[in-house]
Amino acid sequence: MIQFMSGFDVWNRFKGEKVRVYMNLHQTKRKGTPVYSVKSARTGLVLCHPDYVCLKDVTFKVSEAGRHRVLREKQKNVHAFVCGSVGHVSNATKRLKSITYNPYRLGYFHDKVTGEEARELDVVWMHHKGLQTEV
Image 1: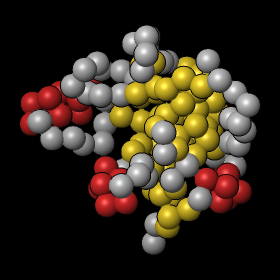
Image 2 (image 1 turned 45 degrees about the vertical axis):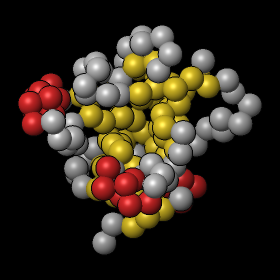
Image 3 (image 1 turned 90 degrees about the horizontal axis):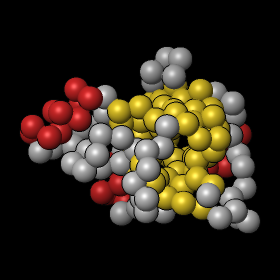
Image 4 (image 1 turned 180 degrees about the horizontal axis):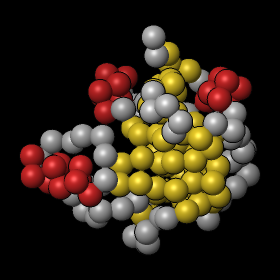
């Protein structure tokens, strides 16, 4: 059974493992705050549903076919992932900027303020405020 975990538990259990993370829309609607699904890059299986996860050596993947299906059907589906290794980096003293993805606006993850495409980042925090990285 897939379990809900804290971000600290995710780090303890899957430290260094390469994963693909997406926002779980069904659980997010039910709980009212973002819930993420963490899939193993090796097996493709969902490992857990944390409310917080920190990834290192991050890349962003968007399936164009999945995005076109969203645009055509006007119904969201899982087609965009944040890929990286599970890590733990404190963001308490860092200046952060938000990263976002909206299939109806742009076909890639981007800086929420400037619109600049996000391709590869050292670290990303996914939590109740969404995706954030260092400025």
